[in-house]
Image 1 (tube, one colour):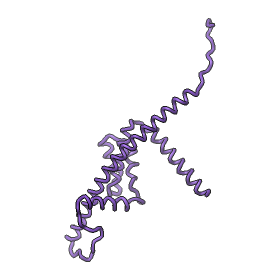
Image 2 (spheres, rainbow, N blue to C red):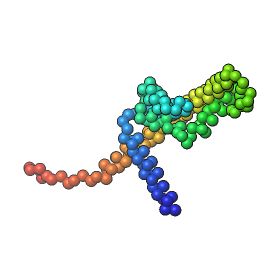
Image 3 (cartoon, rainbow, N blue to C red):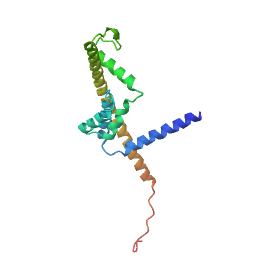
Image 4 (cartoon, rainbow, N blue to C red):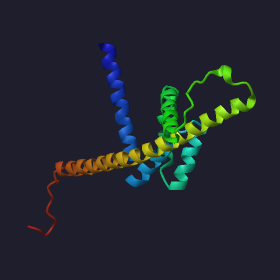
Length: 179
């Protein structure tokens, strides 16, 4: 039980720190949301090692926040690679109407041309699925993060106004000649 409390405290502290870091970032909510969205788009592609570079390039191209773009690429990480890319492959195969099974009878591949044909079809299905899922995820991420950032900033302004109201003005000393 104690271990669970420590874990809860750790993640709660981590989320609060993340919240304050996002709140402290400079830029409009649209700028921040664009950066996160293009990062998620880049993270949906299987170009390991280049996802962050692609995310940063897209952030420059679409004028989004570069740090959030780099963070958004971590939607795919070593724990989520297989489920995400398997899902993307199946979506691409379904949209393209491919009849190729995921794991075909490898004994039927007799020449290098057969292997390249299967590999090319696999790559096309995967990349098309990654593109479709990435665009849908990026659009969703943009609108969800835009709404969250606007809400957080509105709450921050309300908190600052409330804090200002709590400060009572000091009694003013009368100047010379005033009564």
